[in-house]
Image (cartoon, rainbow, N blue to C red; front, side, top):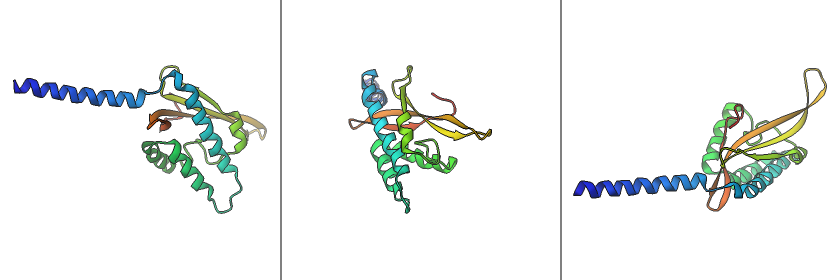
Length: 163
């Protein structure tokens, strides 16, 4: 009899934990797509603008930190630090610098297979080996979660393989 009661308690606790985990990561639906797209557009526009603002003392870093704190989970901010060390770039923009005018080219898409995966793409001009100007596109793949009623970036995915 004791074993049966103990097993029921364990089953209940495990079920509760599983529901909590699934709710945290799957809370958003296709209906949330406009809210998430707006959040990402706001973040990337402000982020790219911060790089462009004239700043002799590099105080724009404070703005970038504040934006990451507002729009990224603690898990993502930890990952950010690790990725900066391994790539020598800013993983939010998948590069070393940015320009406010690139925000006008932002394209935000939800992965059709997974409601929590989004991609953010932007275009920019760069000179190729042929010394001619070419359009290039940079894509950042992200996992989005609802944390405390606000959508945030929870993880930056490997941008070389897509989703």
